[in-house]
Length: 259
Ligand code: FE2
Image 1 (cartoon, rainbow, N blue to C red):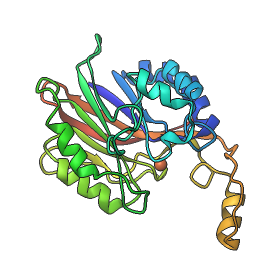
Image 2 (image 1 turned 60 degrees about the vertical axis):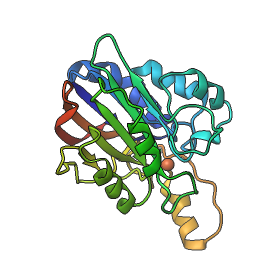
Image 3 (image 1 turned 180 degrees about the vertical axis):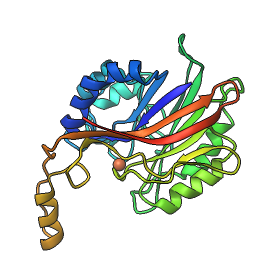
Image 4 (image 1 turned 90 degrees about the horizontal axis):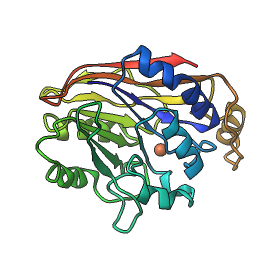
């Protein structure tokens, strides 16, 4: 089973490159499934229902979320109604939507996607480690392919989650920082790990935003209105080959493509 897991889709440039490239990429790379973190696909902050539908229609199978998922209020009903849209599982009870799901497609092996949110240098949510433990206890035994998107800021927390879940899930993949890390690896018990997948959005930018206003805010300490960069987009993520019968990753490699 060949999977492309894309880092944070950022703003219109990220959505545009996906709509243009996804159909060809699925064919050219022989992809069985494509998952992307999409919490900042609308204006670089949040995700509207319209943008979520656009991404799903472009050829993405599942969209994951993060700390900005609930910023656009109109996404709430879709989080409840769409089976292909996830938000972090460790939000306190009462949040709309679901944090994990098992998918049983006709044309590929069954797989589970689990979405978790970090707590270090981020707003407080429930414990992601406890949430992961609880979800593992509910996953059906006949679904060994288990993919975790850990949307978190701190490399230490991400590494810890990788080792916590090592041997119990297929892959722990970090998102949120928009900077692709060079540490794709198989952990000792066989779980694939990468601290951050990077960003699918404007390449020459400050995490997707026009650098000018970001620099000004750092230099002055005053609030500035950030604008999505108009720079040419790049897609970033990880290309993963999985032995679907065992749920074990055979290879994981960082992947990037100029738009
Ligand atoms: Fe985030």
